[in-house]
Length: 248
Image 1 (cartoon, rainbow, N blue to C red):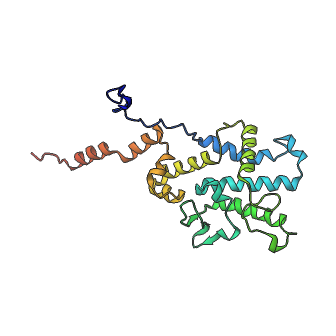
Image 2 (cartoon, helix red, strand yellow):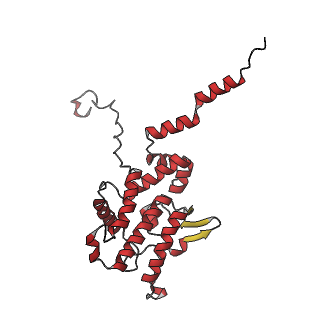
Image 3 (tube, rainbow, N blue to C red):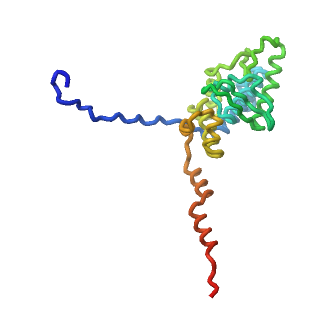
């Protein structure tokens, strides 16, 4: 050793252990339903009296826009940056219904995502509000964002997150709900219902290992799938079916 003070390095055989994974909040279906309802109620003067101080057109603007944004996030598992980067032309009609086109994703590979009828209805309602708001704006001044701010510009992520936090507080929801936790909820649901490959393609992950980070399979899901697959049941039932009765 240096300066001959030690014969060997005391840490020579020490192996650095992997740091424990930090807990990542996973919203429950009840949380997400409450958030969606909370957005509608937050701008309803009967449910939140303070909303009366906001003009009606402004309330409908934020209500319909935020509700559509949340449904797009859940329906597509998109990153919040991808949602706010959508242009009007990215929301298009495909052969089997509405689609969203992500032209510049995190992995720089474009992808086309299907839009459910329920989500499309919310986006179409928002587009009516958008058309009204932008009716007096010259066409050349419209930047073409699918979701716009009050000034017609691109929605700021930080400002939108603050709105979500306000709605969560109003609806008595956990403060842990944010843009990324909802993406995690969506990807997890897609993985459970449609399989890992489906969730991976929707999320835009190149490696399925990345998709697995977003999943959190609970015991009820395992129980349901275990009963559905029924390995042992299938073996025993098939054996008993094949077995024939003695004739003598």
